[in-house]
Amino acid sequence: MEQLVYAVNEPVGVEEFIRVLNRSGLGERRPVQDRDCIRGMLENSNLVVTARIGGTLIGIARSVTDFHYACYLSDLCVDRDYQARGIGITLQKKTRETLGPRAKLILLAAPKAAGYYPRIGYTNHPGCWIITPEDPLG
Image 1 (cartoon, rainbow, N blue to C red):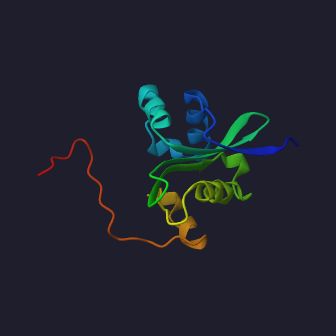
Image 2: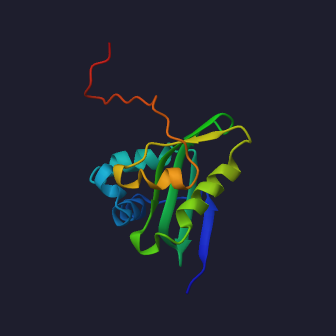
């Protein structure tokens, strides 16, 4: 079996990101049909940790952070063929290793993954609020 290689902030292509989103199940909750949006998601992330086997992207943790106080983990996904092997937790650990000592990880869990996060140490925070572009503000 080829070696699993983790990397921080190495380039990720739009098509390979879409592939791993779809193969992880997260694609149903992301705009995978809108390549411009996906490109913007990648280009404007400032912390991306990847997992590859034989050069093929099989996992990604994509974040937006200030590196000191907060890190919003926007996407965490692992190809279904590689799930339950510790890859997701390693992606999160490598994300944390890149952050300053006070920075906390913050994420919104997909409904199917909501049970995963408490098992690995996350605390639920009831004060999260979301407004979509379609919703009026004010």
